[in-house]
Length: 564
Ligand code: WT7
Image 1: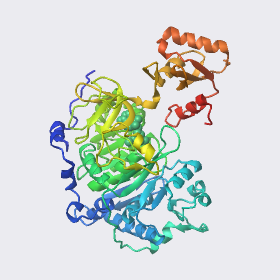
Image 2: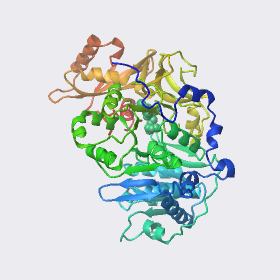
Image 3: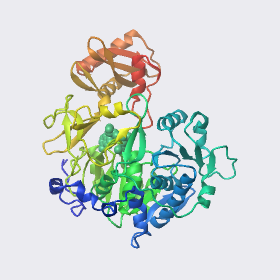
Image 4: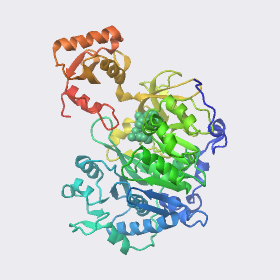
């Protein structure tokens, strides 16, 4: 198998990566925004109103929405009016610059209108992921001191209104005939009454725009804070990584409660003024294909799980759908296996371009560009203007092909500006100035390509050697009696950290001391000694999340004897 693929599109927006890196200057990107001349800053103006005022762009669709029951198209022109209306609703409820407004909705047009309206009043918006349960919702609203929440009557059941002293109003989308409780208002009624005219709140580039909560590896969720200046990074990465051109139609499949959805599903395409497609509701593989086909999607930003499922069912798809509109495909969120990249090149006539970034980085940091050769298995090279490195525990750069912490030199425009009300946790990312320490393990090859090797928290250091917990788990699953296994590092007063394994047995086997010893013996015989767990405990089941990954937090809690 070849291990370097030629550039997928030599005509890409970014044609010469090395040259761009040499001459890159963020100041030049700033000149693309109207505030460069007027001094009036608000991302909503750049993303919506500017296009609404441009006769060549005002009729493009900032939202093409579709689910089982609803189809809607909103032009940039219409979005200006709708977001003005929503901004007026917020004003009427007393929302001021800097107040926190949460959006807790399934994917629907109102989600996007609300996001734009929040930015227009200068509120700090916080998009929530649809599946959050009551405890998680409470935690986030409380931590941020949210003043207003937009939700549906059904999801409002997960919002403990009376336990949230700062929360003044809930705006209900689809309130229909229900009786509103004190503090609740109807989206439909308020929007109908509100004016189309609104004077945008002009901001400072460093003023907050949104907070996204990430679960973090331990403890309470972190409110990652982003500011209006982020737009500089959104625009240029959309152009050079997503390769957006004037006539493109983008589908970023992540929901707006995740950063990929917020940035590349909303603000980035809007800043470029392209058509932006969103599919709501639940749908399967056929739904993915139908949407691409019927809306003639040209640029598709999705995740490895979706691509892997497509690869498995390639034949059915090829018979039923025409996916030839796709000219550029990107992936984010988890490791993209090389086979999938090769498969895509054959199947879609374009490989998949992996991108790496995090909620905290705010924009794509490392990527495979359509104008640059791809090494499948690699996350690519740093975006021009971004300096990435692999560092050791002391923040010192390590030589190529050495595993270490993936770090980015501090100070790019979309870098998080804080962890909400938690300066200490923010500073933890910068323990080795000038680096932002990502917590991801990676290495770089001799040509400057980076390779993701798992989260730091999946790795444990035993006797000074790095061990991948997944490697141990896989080995354990090879033993006939083992149905599933989960591994964590257990603090040990003498040896620092020892390997602790939780094991679920197959039916017909019961936990015993002998079995523990047999498993250890099996590990010793067939695998390296360093992979042998010191402690083994049996459990009926190993906790796994929706994505199939072991929920290490629960294992950690078991190992430490804490509540899970
Ligand atoms: C973590 C960040 C920013 C979008 C997605 C999720 C993992 C991200 C890749 C990739 C392997 C990746 C990292 C990172 N990740 N991109 N291309 N290959 N892993 O944002 O929820 O903040 O998660 O996602 O572990 O730290 P997030």
